[in-house]
Length: 97
Image (cartoon, rainbow, N blue to C red; front, side, top):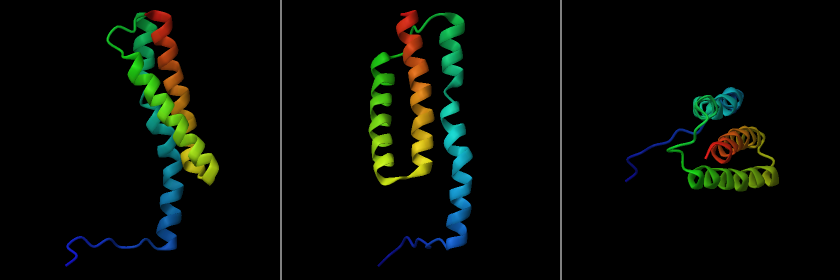
């Protein structure tokens, strides 16, 4: 017995979701900007874990490689923006530690 039923998307719905994903894939990583601002305005990375942010960047890089290999444009955009944000946080950590 199948309790959960998942409706398959129509081609029109899939295209709409694909179009909606572009702004989300750019805006979502930009939510890291407050952390970047916090580090650089206070000139302190106290309480910010370099290991965590470096691991985020490594994992994001691996996903980016996979997205490039499979030519998944939305994921390439998203992971590229994430890597920029991670790079900024990591740079701030090493500058202000």
